[in-house]
Structures are given as structure tokens and as C-alpha cells.
Image (cartoon, rainbow, N blue to C red; front, side, top):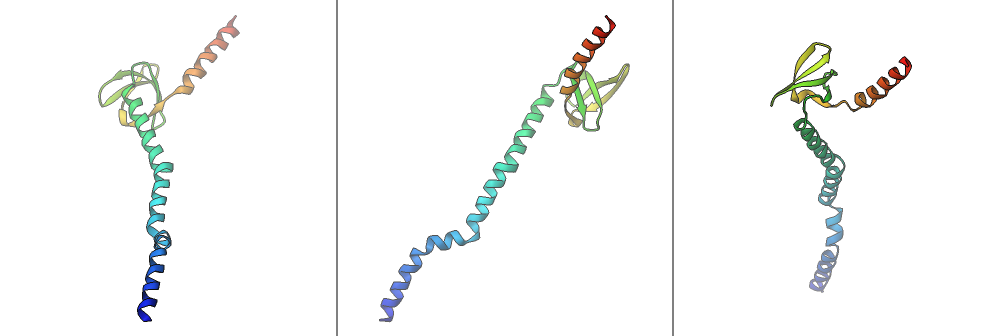
Length: 122
């Protein structure tokens, strides 16, 4: 009778295997890692890729912002650095690694400002 009872409990343990596996911390850790990957890591990698492409596509005449907060127009380009004109006849050399991005606001803001000043002159 003890053998039959032991065999019966063994069958129940096998049936509860899925419940036991799901209650262990391993599947939860895998799920949390997957969520972190899709919510944090993957978008950051995408942003870094776009930034690298932007740095590779910089050319003379582009308006940029540096990580130090300088706004300027590119007047010279080398592999490692850029020459910026930050004011009339004021040029500085900046490492490509310190370019934060393109100055999109300045292009759109400067065009209407010129148009308004010309209209005011008439």
C-alpha cells in the first residue's frame, strides 16, 4: 500500500511541474529582461544609430548645436573635427564627438524673421 501511495504522489508532482516552473523566478526574470530590452535598450540603440548617421552626413553650411551649447555654421570639415563660425569672423574648431545635433529651429526662425524685416522696410 505504501508503494501505491508513493506512485500516486509522483504522478501529482509531475502534473504540478508547470505550476512549479512558472512560480520560479527564472521566467519572471526573462520576461522583465525582454520588457527592458524593448522599452529601454532598443530605442536607445536606434537613437545612437541616427546620431552616428547625422554626424557622418554633416557638411559645410549646416547649422549645428554643440554639447557645450554653442550654435554655429560649419565652415570646415575633417574626419575628426569641424570648424564652426559662431559669429562674424569668429571660428572655433570642435570635435565631431561634441556635436549634439542639427539646429533645425534656427533655419525656420531665420527665414520668417528676414521676411518680416523686409516687409517692415517697405
